[in-house]
Structure formats: C-alpha cells, structure tokens
Image (tube, rainbow, N blue to C red; front, top):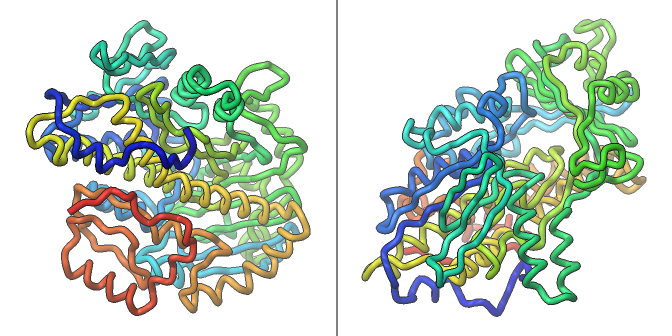
Amino acid sequence: MSASPSNSPSFSNLQQQKSKKKTRLRIIIIGAGPTGLLLAHIFSQLQGKVEAGIEFIVLERRSWEEIARPEHGAALVIWPHTMRVLDQLGLLEGARGIGVEIDELKVCDARANEFHRLALEDWTRSLHGSNPLFFHRAEFVRLLYDSLPPSVQDKIITGKTVTDIQTIPDEEGGGVVVTCSDGTTERGDIVIGADGVHSKVREVIMQKLTKVNEPEENAAGMRGKHPFVAEFRCLFGYTTHLLPGLEPRKIYEMHSIGTSSQVFTFRDKAGFMIYQKMDRPSTLNDSPETGKTRRRYTFSDVEEFILQVGNFPVASCDKQANGTGSVKVNDLYKASCWTVLSDLHEGIVDHWHAGGAGRMVLVGDAASKQTPNMGHGWNCCVQDVVVLSNLLSALVGRKSHQDGEEAVTVEGLDVLFTEYQRTRYPLSKACLETSMHWARSHAWVSWWYWFLNRYVQTTVSPFMWATKIQPMVYGLGPQIHLGHVLNFLPERSNLKGVIPWANVSPWANEQSREEDQVQIEQGNGRLHTVQEIPSRSGVKFP
C-alpha cells in the first residue's frame, strides 16, 4: 500500500455500512513509554463515551523500575499544540508543576563566541499561547503513569517481550493474537505499535507485507524493515546540579563543524546532548563488531567520546561566574549523574500498517524517527495518537452502531488505518525533513548549512517572529498551528495566541470558534504556508 492510496473505500462509507453483530473493540498496545501511556489515558477517557466501547491492554518488555528510573532518560519537550491535548486529558496542570518554561535561547560557536539570542516569549507565547515546556523524561513518564486510575494502571503489564503477532481470518472470528517470550498470549482486534525505533510490530508488519505484495513491490516493502539511518551520534546526560555560568530556564547551544551541543537548564540541574557527525552512517542492523541489530556503546566508548569532544564549550558566560568564560563538555560530564551514548536514527516508514495482511498499525518513533535537535519528536508522536484515536472513536461510536454494533473487519481497519496514514504522513515527513535540516545546520556539514545557520537564521528569523510571518526557516510554526486535538473531549484552558488554531474540538465553545474565524478572515491565518499539508483528517464531525 502506498502512503496516500486513492483507490480504497472512504472512511465515511465505512461508517454507513450496515452493522453485523455486537462487539467491543479490544486494543493491544505494545510499549509503555510516553506514547503508550498517553494512549492509555486517551482510551480510558474514551471508554463510556461511545456506544460500543473500547477495551485495551498495554504490554511492555521492560520492568517499571527500568521505565521510570529517576536518573535515566533524556529531556522531553512539549509545544503548545501538545499542551492542548494534555489539557483535554486533565494533565496540563500536573505537567506545568514538574516542567520548566524555557524563556531564552543562546547560541555560541566552538570558541565560545555568542552569535545569536532568541527570546521565546516573543515567539511561542505571543503566537501560540505558551512557551515550550521542558521535562526530565523519567519525571514526565511518572506523571503519566501516576495520574492513571488504579484500574487502568492494572492494564499495563510489564516484563512482556513480544515474539510473534498472528492475524485470525475474519471467517474464523477475526482478531489478532500476540505471543510473548514467557509463553503467554493476548487476543484482541487491533495491535498498536508504540514500541519505538526498534519496533517489533514494525518488523512483523514488514514480514506480512513482503508475503502479500507483488514481487516487484517487495523491495519497496522491505525498505521499511530497516528504514532508519543514523548520521549522528549523541551523548545524553543530566547533571547533579546547575553549574556556575549557567542560568535557569535557558537553552544553550554550541554550533561548529561536525560537533554541536544543546543544554537545557532546569531550576537546579541541566540536561545535555552532545552531537557528533559520524564518519559513516549506520542503520538499525549495522553493528559489524557484534552482528547484532542494535549498536550499544560501552563505558569505554563514552570515555573515548569525551576525549574527542571534552574541550568544546557548550555555553558562553561571564568570566566572573566560573573563571573561564565558558562551560565545557568536560564540566558537564564531571557533574553528570547519568549519561548514555547512542546513534541518532532518522527516517520515515513507507507502510504504517499491515493493510489487508493484518490488524496492526504504528505510531510515534516506530513509524517516523527524527533527531532531538528541534525538540519535536514526542509532539509528533502525540499527533499520531490523537488522529488515530479520533478515527477509532468514530468507528465504534457513530451511525453504524445505531442499529447494533458492527464487527471490526480487516477491510474496515484497512480503510481506517489508510485514512490515519494519509492524514499524518505529510506532516510527519515535513517535521522529519525540518529536523534533519536543523541537525545539519547546527553541525555545519557544508558551507551552505554554515551560512544558513550563522547569517540567515539569526538575521531573518527575528524579523519573521516580529511580523508574524510563518517561520519556515525554523519550521515549527506549521506543526504547532496545524495540530489536531481529540474530537471527543473539550478544551479546558482555551490556550491561544495571535495565530488561530487550524483544528479545534467540536466541544469548543462558540465564542472561541468565532474568535478563531475572525482571526483567519483578518489575515492572521496566513500561517497556512505549507499548502500541500492537510489541516484536517477528512472525517466530518458534527
């Protein structure tokens, strides 16, 4: 199946089909990271809001101690469109309690010469209603889990490594069976792969597609088996305290040839990412030393990495602050409580679902992976989850169930998953491409990226913020502006800035709708600069 099929039945036609028999949609979610936990929140809210209803279970290979270990995990960023979704789920207040609003970006070069500053207050808060929120990833995961009702927490089963997924033909009752390494099985109607870049669900989908595709299509289908390539690697870490020379609530970046860095300062500590362009790219199955499918760096690898980059500055500061006028990678490393070195894979999967070959669909990093330079990765995951949840809500709760509840067939799910990928693929690909440009402009991989970073972004971007013209150089504007929200929950805080939202919940109050329409008619809606990106899913709600 292609990314945007044109010959499959419409989702609206599926909703109008006559019902067959009573059923409840049982969903098996693979992965209990932030994306899987968000799905648990959404489906627990959806339960009881539709006639047929949804049941779900979450399977996670790691233990809970591994998932939420306090000292582990990189920084996580949420932008205003994601805040709208957290607001709908009643999570935004708690998120603000543990997160930090970053108010300024400072950029220097390898000689610690600062060459750019950007006040985020003038951008995201003015245009979209809030500054970005930064989190320690483990703290955010703990918030997502702890805020679930105990009955929903019981649905999250750890220590479950998926080894196989089999589809049951519709004529035999339909469904899917997930087998785990401990011999246990789970049966449901749908499998959602929220299991990240090393997704088992994606692997099974690709296996199924190569069996049903025409021979000439097999090569294209197999591209999805190892779809991601890494040109950069990154040392992630956290410090035990805020180092002298660093101020709270800042982003410090260092840009130079082949090496760059980002430091996010919290109230009393800092998270950091040190990027390095690799001599040769690697794929997910590229580890010549061991032959394994995942490259794992050792402590000695980290020490060697620090020898290479340790003297690079990560921030320029007043000499009186620490006596040197800069904070270096070595300073961060010596003050760290946790570090991990990892390849940064990038790419997007051609096939987000198994089509007629199965009942499986991918969300988040399992479908599209980007480097963390732009801080938008999990926000894309949230958009995947929101669009898919809206479609599932429509499937089980609309007119097709007024005379009984319709059985969920592979054909019906193929239509739904195709609509999901059609809606999300263009925006996800645009976000990936923007992130790729960010990573390469920070690392000055060519004279063009050096010129773009040093002179275009620093000169043109402030003018674009001030004039409210779409900041296409940075590329975040369309993603924020076109963000989807849940169609079956109200928006509580009415978060908004100068730029109106392209998509609002049908539960939004009339005053909010009218204000957005006035803004669009007055010309503030010119943020629709990416014309080919659809702003709506194509599914009509009253």
